[in-house]
Image (tube, rainbow, N blue to C red):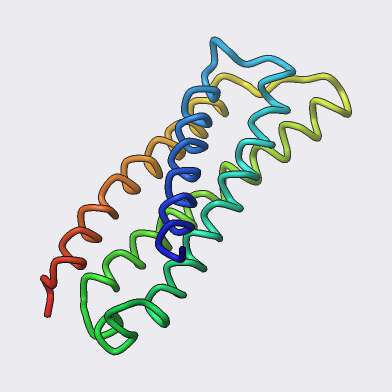
Length: 145
């Protein structure tokens, strides 16, 4: 069950970062997209927290035991990449909240430059996320020990 919840959280995270990447485009930006981006990003953030929590739980209560996982450098690579993605995600999250506030206060949409910058950060996150399962596969197969 723990592995299932972990995988489900990963898939949710991937779906919602993909949704952010699809929505955060200059040509599609309107009032509904601004509101939707904030909601999509919140779900993405909750999924990321669940990925981290279930991943840590798997290292503690998983089949191989915490000693095996925490001494493997590949786990640390995965965690480092995940933390980098988390740190990058702070900026789009703050931006979406600001865009939504500006929209509600004065009906203004974000500038094209802001949208491009934010989309670039979302795409960087998405591309880094793709690497994490590669290290997970190697970790699961005993590499790094």
